[in-house]
Image (cartoon, rainbow, N blue to C red; front, top):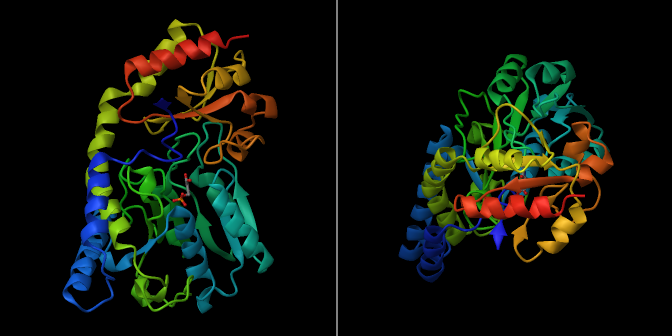
Length: 373
Ligand SMILES: Cc1ncc(COP(=O)(O)O)c(C=O)c1O
């Protein structure tokens, strides 16, 4: 099976699997317990907290472990907006029209609480520009949330510029870094980021674990999102998932090297070359600065149903939409870019593993060629 859906979930790295097995076997104590095994679990959890903080130029005290980026996005919005009295008169949120679906769901909830939401559309390259964000900001904007890397296009948004503008206006800036973490440079100070979301399973770690960075967490008055026994600075109750966090730590340690391999191998360029050599009509959605493992490809002269059906047991492809590839409706990212429903139906999101070979890419190109009208 050729797996081409790493933006939805990256295969677990073998070393991560080993560290998980070891942690499940030996690190079973509750990290809140005051005995030796509990303290050992706490030390290990806090080492990963330090590692993550180091990776993004933050303090360990500013990191809260969650179940993944969806929960981190929830914590980001709810912990900050539902408790900070200084913001209670500000009821406007700016997001982009190409955010992950969970951001829209969170905004629907805030709309019910009386907030107004402005959507910033991408430019023709699939990028959210600082100019467009500036135009959407109002006197009563409480929060701007723009993802770092788009999960369908692989485009990198200029979050440092957006962060600088938000900082100058005193607006909280959140960025969903589920797709960019450990793949491209992040420095929360240089980028003026106040809140940022991460997920382990996008970097070869286990599912069910992630984190949120909150600047000056301990100095803020924050609304707990899961009321519990005080874990994670009281923001997110529940026994801390030490084994999963240890696995996440291993992934953070190793994934940047894995990703450097992508950069050196550049599978995307080889794929484009092969498409051209085989005279396959195609267009790419999202230009300019993009990550080397993700691409959105429209194939107007390809019988997509045939391509998917004939290769069901050999290719794992995401069609039209990102994390919910079973959806039949056109993805909101593609329609934001101006694609019509039919064009979106002829579009695939391809995201390689670091183990993809030239033979795999040749197989994919041949499969596409075979499915031509
Ligand atoms: C940009 C983005 N945000 C959030 C998520 C959700 O992440 P998780 O599965 O960790 O909740 C994903 C992936 O599904 C994503 O690509």
